Length: 194
Image 1: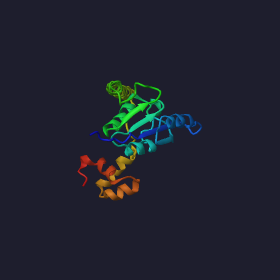
Image 2: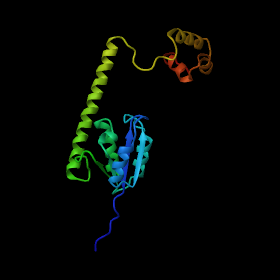
Image 3: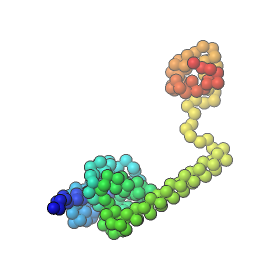
Image 4: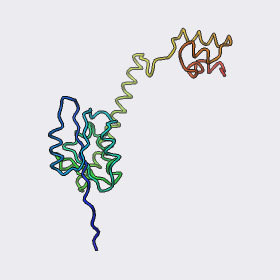
């Protein structure tokens, strides 16, 4: 006896980057592909917090298929593409691009391509890390300060230390300089502020 498996739910995802662009062509293609529900948004693909994308990922169940017209509608980098497709496949769903037949995790070729994408994403991540470290080193060599600017000027820091030594409380100092108590406490860690 064979078990009747319900047909896969096809979830479409359509995205354009700017308000001036239209989703019409993508919607038409996704409807023609049989998508029962289409998540649509007008937002840059560089943003990781795309509301409709996150909503779609939460709705997925095993056996579902996410369909896009082109992979660049889903992600702007190899790393992001791999990360999103991994979220899809982790719940047992599949991913398919209409314009790129190789991007179909329901096929052995598509699964191979996903593995290759994973390797490329690792390389991309390493390159970004290397470029960031090199940029940081060059900035330090030029004498640029890294990180957030200090909340207090050197003069204010010296003044706060002096006032603390004369008995001002951390809370009083924090309020007078409009900073947090931790900021003041950090100034005097070597002076045993308590």
